[in-house]
Length: 137
Image (cartoon, rainbow, N blue to C red; front, top):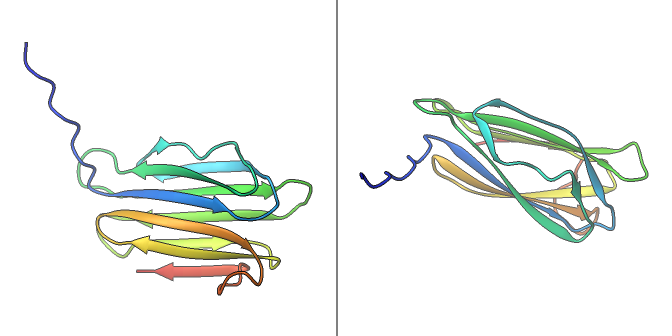
């Protein structure tokens, strides 16, 4: 019997650490992976003061990954949206939106396989206002 070969490393991936440093529970409204696939799904709920990890990967061959997830803030009509793309060719992008009462900090570690930390804070506890932020690297 032949030993199993290890799974190949994807050409592109994005690992997202989502930190909710607010008093609000977040409820997932939508998730979509338009390129590649989910390897770790975003959780249906994110409790206040908690952290979760989710991941998308390129499918076989020369390709990238692109995804979007939206959470509503329990008890309000406000939403938080995270979106990313790590194409095989071109620049990666990270986009997020949040109500003005919240702030989002973004930290990333570069490479073909990005690791991205999105941290949601009450406004005033961060240097970045949430309304809309677009980053392209």
